[in-house]
Length: 263
Image (cartoon, rainbow, N blue to C red):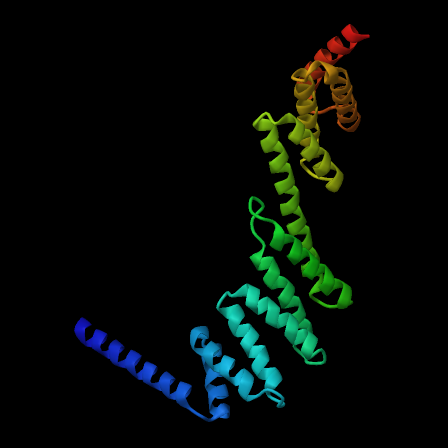
């Protein structure tokens, strides 16, 4: 029975391949369009794509061109080629701004960039691009039902950038690159003033500033201990009841010991 089933499956596949070859070889664009849509609806994007790709030229300048282009972009999306899909969704919305699909195409262009945006530990170039595209959509489509979702994606992408900035700064601290840690933490705290990592970031900045001062050459010690003192005061002003109180006070007592000795 199993052998019969395998034979039946093979025959079915051969028939299917034969049918698809007939579609590919057909010189009738209308027939190809109907079959391409059938393949698309069946999520057979690998079969639909070559047909829509060919039909893009066949129907250029005709009333069907918009339908073909819409399916073409969506087929790329179905194949998870988000970079090309995003490009064509955006081009569709710009070329056919009055088409019923134009607004959705514009949003899906931005969404494709979102799908390409990496996790926080990787290169953030596409994260910035996705945020820009989402914001552009919001600015140019007032009242669109997609705006709440677009705002949500911007918030999520911003959180990824925030975590990346914090992780980089924390990495410098752990590798005892204290000058780089202080600089990175200052940038992170400036760019993300309401960060949920703010308390820990301020503590890391204090520790890094103190360690940088402690390991400084003689002519830079005084300035750097004063900077460490400022880091402590800013930290305690922001979080007077911090969970890092013992660590902060330990640094501060050593900072004061140096400053009092120098006064």
